[in-house]
Amino acid sequence: MLLRLRMTSPYFSQNRTVVTRRCKQIDTSTAAVSLLSGLRKRRNVNAVKIEEEEARVCLSTPDGSQDLFQLATVLPKLETDVPPSSSHGRRRRQIKKQLGFIRDMRSNRDAPVDHMGAEKSYDAEAPANVRRFQVLVSLMLSSQTKDQVTAAAMQRLRAHGCTAEKLLSTDDDTLGKLIYPVGFWRNKVKFLKLTAAMLVKDFGGDIPDSVEGLVRLPGVGPKMAHLAMDIAWDQVSGIGVDTHVHRISNRLGWLRKATKNPEKTRKALEEWLPRELWSEINWLLVGFGQQVCLPTNPLCSVCLNQHSCPSAHQNSPAKRAKAQTSSSPALRTNKNTVVKDETRSGELGHVNSTTQRRTAR
Ligand code: SF4
Image (cartoon, rainbow, N blue to C red; front, top):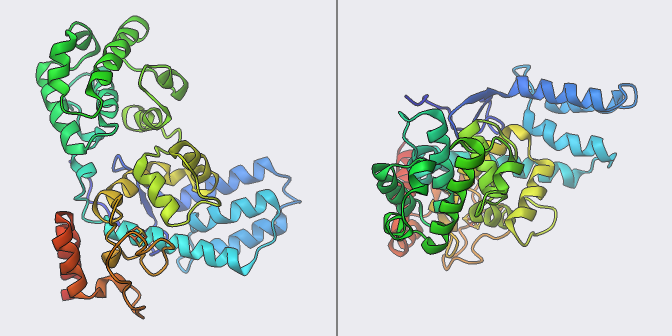
């Protein structure tokens, strides 16, 4: 049974809990303290005494706990000795606010990734090594493929028998029919067979427990490896940056410089995003990208970040909404605009219903 989760921003609001993609809750004040401890170990205490004090002042909240997001944004300053400036402060506050708004928009947890992602595609009753193998298979199938198509293929594979040994003994034609129409299904048949053979030979049918081991498997790249470590092994090794995370991070201007590919985006994000958020950021942005910040024609008119996003309305035909004074501007989005967007895309239903519910309060 999944925990009932508080999905408003732990940093933007007074909620002190981070929710991971595996629905685990982390006490951010504890995490902040451990980060500060790490900082003390790395640097001479005297040398950073003043800076730590400054960080503590920044991190203090009215309830006496510490704000991890602020800590994370202070850390780079401490590491590089860059003097604080008002523009840095503004930027930090803006990113914090944008992250909080995305959490608000994702609070219904009703994007395809929420009920058809890799963490939902394995047989929960199967032995642990089989569950891990199925997570990896699901991730391999999901590349360039909609979650609905991946989930259906996984259902067929599980009915057939989805273990490394079983896939290895399945002929290519049968395997192709089972996974069709996932993207690049012919290549994926080859990769699945080669991967299954390696796993049977070297890992007893289980999957490697390191990124280095995972990326050696045919068809497995860094994104899949980090996600597999997180979902299958419950270890956060890096941010799983797919096309949604890559696109949205760039649209929102979260990176120092625009990046050309997901791997560069991963490295740039990991420079400043607190490790405690690495797991959450993937499912947060993937769902946001599936529902609001669409690859083409993003629904900027209903996006809570439309007034701070540098890319707002650049790819959307809807006119930019007038600046509003409400703390939640998109909750007061012009109804006519919402209807227009809904007509254009059938994916807006949840956003519209959320908007109506909130407006009705
Ligand atoms: S304003 Fe538009 S481009 Fe910017 S994050 Fe929102 S949906 Fe994406």
